[in-house]
Every structure is written in structure tokens, then in C-alpha cells.
Image 1 (cartoon, rainbow, N blue to C red):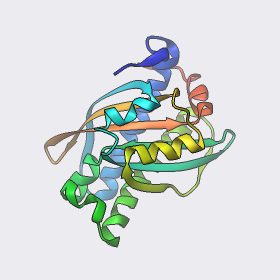
Image 2 (cartoon, rainbow, N blue to C red):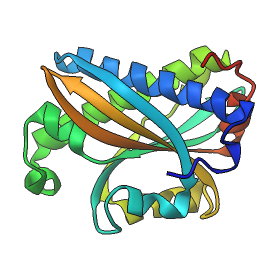
Image 3 (cartoon, helix red, strand yellow):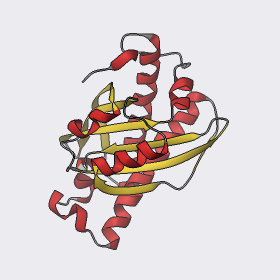
Length: 200
């Protein structure tokens, strides 16, 4: 995984620290909301070009889950968190084959999990950036990764933009599984995040 132009400088370390805290807190919130003990055993933050995301999540035809929100406040913009469905599959105890054909109850459960993820991530951003962020109701999509990327490209991303990747090893009920989170956001948030004093 290529960490791009921010690797090995204070900007990358500051943003890496922000992403690590935000994803860790969001996963813990999902565990509390679902009644399962979820914790991140390890996490590694990197950067890739947004055009390389499909390769990282399988291929262009692979299903992924996307969580898209518009943020407003002192600074405004968009954020999308996309990931492989492993986390949702574990919590719901379902097979990948049924993910795209869930009934209304199953779709609502995915929505609840993803809303918790998004809220936890944004709350941590608020705390660390020291600014209030008002989030719209998040739009949760289960679709091919290319379809999710097209939404981001149409709204706020360009193909040459860097996006963050959180490679995680998550523990639940004594079992380990991997999940990959792609964090796409307006440059205004990464610019503000570079001002954080990194503690790693």
C-alpha cells in the first residue's frame, strides 16, 4: 500500500493519528450498540489514489458498503466511508451471498450499524479538530465499489486524489477478522487535520 505524498512527514502522522482514533472509537461504538465486544487488535493507516480503491477491496465487481454524509459547521464538506462487508457479516451472522438480497429488517440492521460507524467517526473528528460538525443523515449503500466511487467522484473526489485506508484486525467474541476501511473526504478536512499535533 502506497502512503503517497504525505508519508514520513508530520502531515501524514497527524492525519494517521486522527484516522486511527476515529476508526477505533467508531468500532467500539458499534460493539456497544450491537451488544458485542468489538475491539481493534491492530490498525495500519495508509494512502492510495482514489482510482486504486477497487483493487484494494477486491475488484470493480465486488460488493462494498458505503456510508455517505454531508458535514456543515465551521468547515463544510462531504465524507464517505466504504469498506468490505466483513464487519457487517460478522455482526449479523450471515453469509456474503445473501447480502444483496436482504429483507427490510436486514437492510435496517445494516443501516443502524453504518450510522453508528459514521456517528462515532464524526464525533471523534469533532473532538480532535475542536470544531462542531453537523452531519446530515447518512446515506447507506450496498453496491459495487465502482458505483460507490462514482458517487464520491461526482460530489467531491477526483481520480488523482489521495484517500485514506485503514487496514484493521478486529476481535469479536475471541475471533479475529480483517476489514479494510476507505476514508474519502473533502480536502478541507484533511487540511484541518494536518494541524493536529500527532501523538504517535
